Length: 323
Image (cartoon, rainbow, N blue to C red; front, side):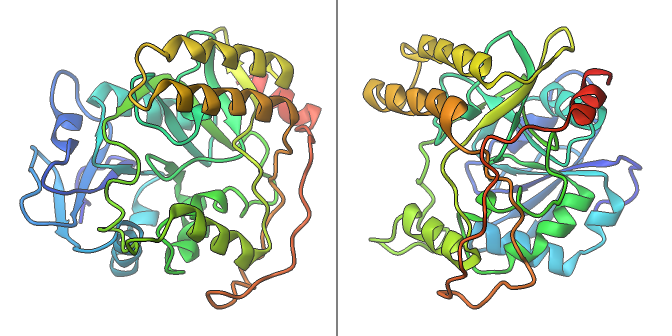
């Protein structure tokens, strides 16, 4: 395990033989992070200065095994990123990502995706040059960056046996969630493969869908998820933006990605217009779940209340705008 570098940031990748992670630590500039490769198949490429373990099998199950075997990871590092191996990024991208996360005291965040990326949620696409970051109710599992305290709280989710859906819950473990989770528009990476291409490796059956597992996760905790919402932002001048109307209007500019998207125009338009509506109309859904309940798989907990359209306190807003 990493230990001697003294760096306080860590990137972990579940890597296969076609992994792109070697490019994350190549090129000019020194990395402000360690890289830990948790390979899930033999033949994963090896880059300079990385640490490596072999953990065959599913992605989330592999992360769970890693943290069970090496709990010191969450005490040795301040920020820990779990990045899919099909993310195209540079050393400078990760350096900047960690820098912004630390500056804004974020608990969980992710880079934005380029407009030519494969994506599930249009909210994760780069918003252009207007915003430095956008505060959100969800950070997806493609490339999340956790504070050590946030990851420590989320580790129980990794051991529940699900390979998707837990990213809709790990922002629901904090009693003070406002302005703690964000998409970093100042850092743009590219997701290079279609979503769902590794389902078999993740333990999904031939007919099993992501939606069925997501529904099972939400039912188990009585949670509700009604869409990815960005409810506040910091612009490039450092000004705090709390108008969901303005953020939604800015999201219309995502349509400029139509000539570049790899997912098909109709699907791209549907996802981007859904995101705009969610910014304006959907509840933010940050009411905490009860991890102590965590009943057996298949159990159903009564639905939790939601926070609908609530805003962070003016005190929180002032604190952000003064950072």
